[in-house]
Amino acid sequence: MKVLFLNGPNLNLLGQRQPEIYGESTLADIESGVRSQAEGRAEIEFRQSNDEGALVTWVQEASGQTDVVVINAAGYTHTSVALRDAIAATDVPVVEIHLSNIHAREEFRQNSLIAPVCCGQICGFGTASYMLGLESALTLK
Image 1 (spheres, one colour):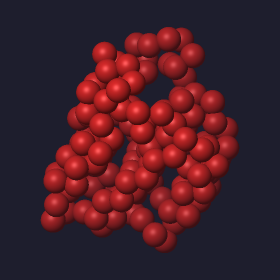
Image 2 (cartoon, helix red, strand yellow):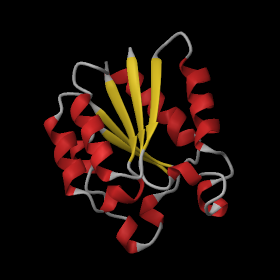
Image 3 (cartoon, one colour):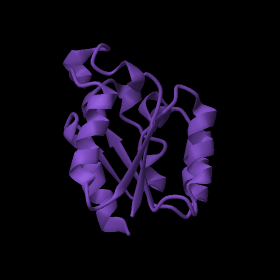
């Protein structure tokens, strides 16, 4: 089984950007933890982009290349109709994840445009959201 983790804007700054909200782990730390947890169960690929178009392209290309996509769309969660449309158009199951509880944050962050076209949403568990995303992905295929 292959699981593709897609990470949106500013997640390359994890560990230094607002650690009181997002924690002190870097994206590389999170990736290492996910790879360890997946060992012997799934092949893991991690990608990050600040570019909305790259995320859309990667979702579109997922069909036939991966079994499940786990996405932390970050700020694009709340703004990207294009990303929502790409997820809706793919035949690959998509799990939405967030480090923080988006429903307990600013009003504009509480609405996810992609949630209705994803299999489910995991949020508020810090880096464990990624581990829970992996476990969820493993149940989908």
